[in-house]
Image 1 (cartoon, helix red, strand yellow):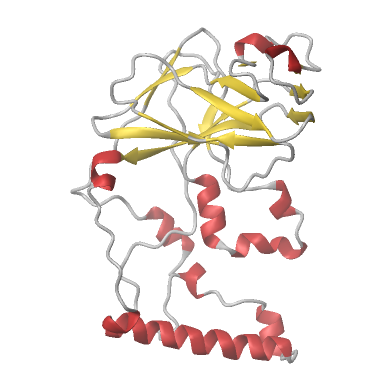
Image 2 (tube, one colour):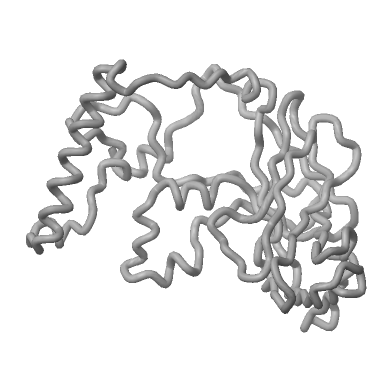
Length: 270
């Protein structure tokens, strides 16, 4: 199954996609764009090996980013007070107070998204840091916001993990959002079962286990074909080891829609 076919598959005709409205609070707002699939640390691996993990790269791009409009430096003394955090920017034109402040103290930096989000009834915005984007010295705090009624904006908070300095580059995401349908999720009843109770699934698992063990053994022995192949691509291709067809929709790329600027401006572009 080719990636072109995978990514071109449309939503089921009975499935209505949720809508997401982002109201800018001021004339200028931070860039609000589809999430990028790439990560610097993944690019720097030999042969870009982390991209072989499809769940990893799919998580990177399943949502939208709100990006820094300018570079921002954060310094924390380790103290509990507002004055123990210093925010600065190499950009002399930067309006720092409009983007970030020390509101909660204790090494927490609060970012203003610049938007008031609205979603359909039952849908909420899940906000946090960009997936698989580790940042030394600071940690993103996640939040679930009831944007189906909220008449004011939420903020994105980062917790310094030790005294020192961290920097956000211009166009680096400080907030990553995706959507959650809360009531349906809460109504989901997980069920724990023995794998052997599902005959076809158990057989597929055993085929995968045998295939994986045989491939790794060949790889360890330096088998030419295995070394050239490098890794098994069953999940990437959306296929079973047994050769059975996968009936579920399989995606190898996520292309979120670019926010449409109905104000006539261009501040939403990266």
